[in-house]
Image: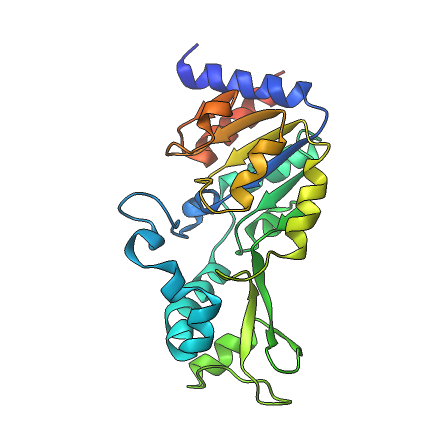
Length: 249
């Protein structure tokens, strides 16, 4: 048995023993779908740019044209991405009853498209946007269509207020899904972290609430010391191997 096989066996044992397991996914879960992550050394988006200058409430309100020029093409690309092996494996683990649901920091919606049923999107999503003045909701595509027609920032048809995406920006309060996830963590035995650097709070504090912790991430995280198993591997490869093992036992 090689080292990877031993780790797969350990994680399979933990999942079978756990009464309630939740997965916590970050940007690393979507890199195999062509979506770059934020904090990998040398390549992460926030290694190159200051997020407070590009993706904060202040950035949106003080320079909305630049906010949309920087963010909207990237977000539009997320909508074209397809689920990868990580997303499909987590959906399969949920189907098998080995994880209860997924808490995700990602806004790309790929977990749902892969078939996951219980997903808490703690940083919001790219399905809708709303007017900052009157609160009217629009499909997210309204932002893209107006931007592509030269309307920047996009405007509300009713009151001509500025539209903003329903994502959690820096300086925003956390989403309702975050508080639902906190409730789910109260009786969670095991948290499996997949592709998260565990550096963005308050989500990065969730491992503290779990009795048992598994971390699958290509680079070390601040919570590795607490984890029962730490896997420095591409999540899709490891989870695919995990599913194979579970199918044989």
